[in-house]
Length: 319
Ligand code: DON
Image (tube, rainbow, N blue to C red; front, side, top):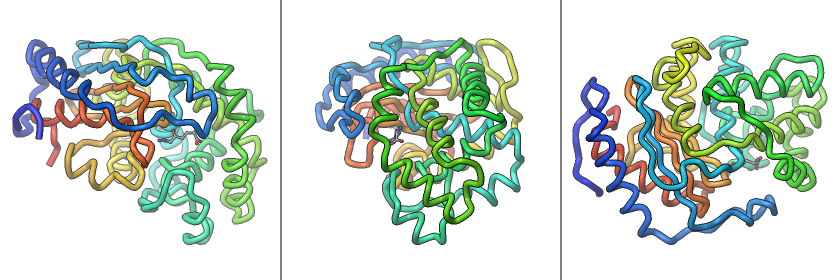
């Protein structure tokens, strides 16, 4: 329950209404101090637990920002959504469904058991197994070439040139034994056919790409806009790919909490362990949030509360 409920209409909300809703959502979420900053990737512990940024980008190119919207952080799992879109653009709907799947595992994002329970199938692109399998399929003869294609694609979604946080990359590369195990397991089932450790390396680099809450909002607005970046006017992926990506996000974007998220917020979203959260209201807006303390599933506490308030007050729930 938040700032009053509205019912979804077809129109992009007016800018002054967005500003008003943004301010109230920010204030309400700021009162929450629960959650814990991620520490399984040691460098992420250094994040400021008080940092909080909220940005709404509309499909007409309007930007509405409050708080630490320019504070940089590593994109982490949110990259999964956009790399999946890039992959779908390349391999098409049917093959993406076949190879990566779109069903929720009901288990944590780095689950090994989920792979075993499903005969080696990664299940969906938003868990680590499915994301590593997706990255393995990206074009490129070498890890560098594959990563270059990913970085270019993510930058087009954001509408600016993104870079890698090398410290985050090195830290995660030194501590990602579990992801290496997941990739080796997928390879043992024939679900990754190239070098599984190369796939993990490219995946680790993609997770280390530096963004801010404003970038997330613009990236989300690009999916909301059917694949066209509303700031640059560039088509990044097709409308069909945007639709498919949003369906995958609705099913699994908040991991084992995806059902609750959809029930409360009614929009596709994607979280990351550094505290980022992107949410997409198709045809209307992208919402980008950054607040490092996470709930037990790895989703930003303030990000979820703020987004729930925005969704309700602007009547964004698609159901
Ligand atoms: O592979 C990992 O564990 C991290 N690079 C990303 C995980 C993540 O962001 C999950 N999010 N909630």
